Image (cartoon, rainbow, N blue to C red; front, side, top):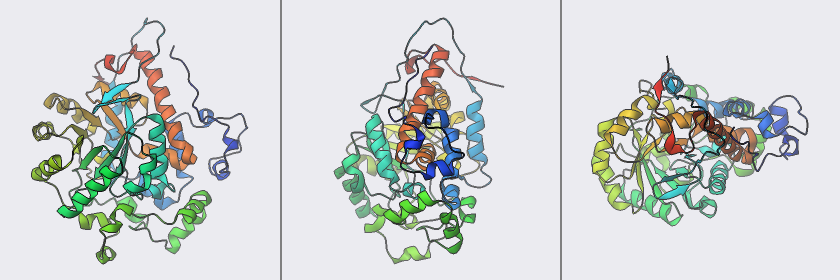
Length: 411
């Protein structure tokens, strides 16, 4: 039987200074209740998060694009990946460590970039970077985050990754790379699956604009979420701080589902990738790969890893589920592979690793955790994922991530 571990932060819920957590997440609970008892799964954090943040913020975080068929496909495809249990392996503690891009990591997952993180919870980027530093896992800061690289460099640790939406202007491009490097980011991630703005109809219907403007409709929603509102009152409404130095008056004419980043960036091509590879001295990852032949060509350009992703269903509603294309990409390249889109627990992480991924990233999940539990949320989510990995590896008889069984299709 896999051992049970208690998270470092599993203090009684009622001891939290944020009393609104108790009000917004249901009935009063006894002092003896810990995070484990109240929030044993990501779904519990997600449900609580929805009750803690304004509706327009929830719609931004949780939505996909179109009818959200790709988002649903990610989930249903993961559910069809089977792993055969194995018996009579005796007592053991699974080894969750892994090596990735030259770093020895205690866990096989990290924090993916999410634009406007600080909209979901005040000071989100700092809290996420601090948690990643404590856990020893990668944290990826988005170009369109509400914190600039310089804002979090003092809490970043050794596994800071910087995600770039590709600037059109070479001077801006070079300056962004310089700022990221000077702030301690070691790995560059180029996102290539956003050649144009997606529709994201749920987000548009919510009334959210970029930068956020608090209309009477949105103010009414804010009034129902006091903890979020107080945090924003202290921090100020979020905006894309890295882009402040490059923005101009044209931002006033943007459509509601776009932002200043769209004015600055271009749709990259293969020459753009080559330019970045030459300009960045460090690990270089390309995010948004869904075809094996693209992974093969990227390997030829000197990319250090490919990130298999469909943007979690937020960009194109006819895209395949990432887990369905992962095996073919694994066959096409010897590069390390990062996987995201649809991950909801430790079992999903094992499904991805068994199917050919070397590392797994989660994005929305960390923000559900932040919105539910504030600064302590990310550590608790990591505890959930780690506990789930241990429990399921025990069922599989897998002593390490390198001994996972081959996956099979469930009916």
